[in-house]
Length: 560
Image 1: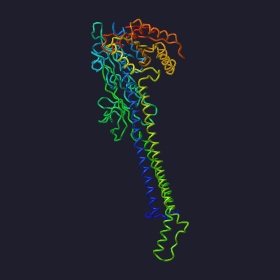
Image 2: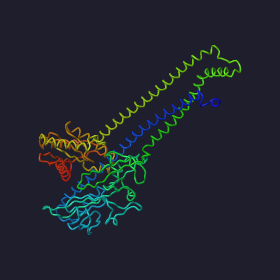
Image 3: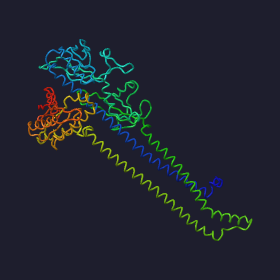
Image 4: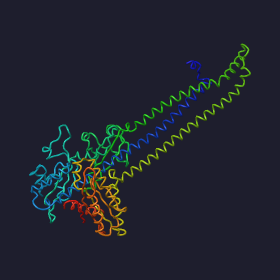
């Protein structure tokens, strides 16, 4: 390039070119790093919140399932077969096996006598063997018990497992069986598959988690890893884990930094296991889009600086030419070698043009500065818009936290809050309320016979029927699975609550559901009492009433 041969860093045009190009590069690089810093923080916040939301959802779902299994074992011991008569009755085994078929998460359900001898069990496993030394039997002699995960001891030789897979592991549920005088008759125990717990947690994590290298861990209260199995002996939670409530960047045992979110499983059962759901993602994976953006900004800055440098050189050459001609004339005069050649009279005006050119260049610099300021303003506007979008997204997440995604009704957490408010209002002003628990009859047969999509559509239509059959002041929520709940405020008497429940029962029985046709529901009604110490009592009465309705043949309303 010929112009490079005339380039000199010490010349006017050389210095102007270098300064202009360097300033452009420095400004563009500074803007790029500033934007990269903002993007890094925003991306870390977004990724951390996403991990937190997934971990919270998994912990809540697992807590609900643990709580439901404990309630189920408690309800199971109320069977007439287990409250009276011989525990060795073959009908006991049939009842236990029916429960196992209804809930495939149970690997084993059995009944022992008061000394720990297994009298009846699903599949006849362990019948006649002593389990008196097992922790679940010893603890459940006096109180309900939920045991931490452990490997199978007695059942490992009786239940098959796939070759090469992890050993069988269970969690124990057990309750005492008492006679009419409160004396111990025996213990009802159940072993639930550990894979049921892991599938519950994994089901919440999105399908894109593997691509984003998000790993799901389950840890106990001491920081030991319970899941996945291959990390049990090689990995522990970092000492600093849990210092922040939502998410944090932690260095793990492998020396790598991870974006980490941890949520404790609060099942509110008779035994708090202290489990924690942990989601972690390699920090370099979480911030990869920012690194890409930085590289692109740096490349763009360098190319732009080169273009500006070339433009500056051409501009400086045009400005310096009249001055160089004058300089040659001065040198000619100094050397006295020959008559100096001055610029032609017409060209003397170029000196004035030089001033105007400097002014033009100054205007160009100001214009460039204004354009950069406009660019900064535009970027700040984009940051504000993204901040507003994030705020709206947070509001949507808050809404989703109180709304059941399938039916659009209030979810369990929102119901618990409204129930507590109603209980407090009853204590302050004496304004009563009623609670109606609703359960779809034979819902598992609908799922098995018509598929889960048909089952989901049944739940959605049930939600719409409940909204249509209740007043605007009534609070309708999905309680869990195929169970719904209606909180009836300002309930004057039991008859009024029975009328609301019967109206719901008839509406469901008369309705036609897509694919499945007609279904029925069982309803349990409980009226709040001033003597209730907590909301648990009114819920338990409604639950018992619902259970009684099921026992009496379903498609009916029972009040307690």
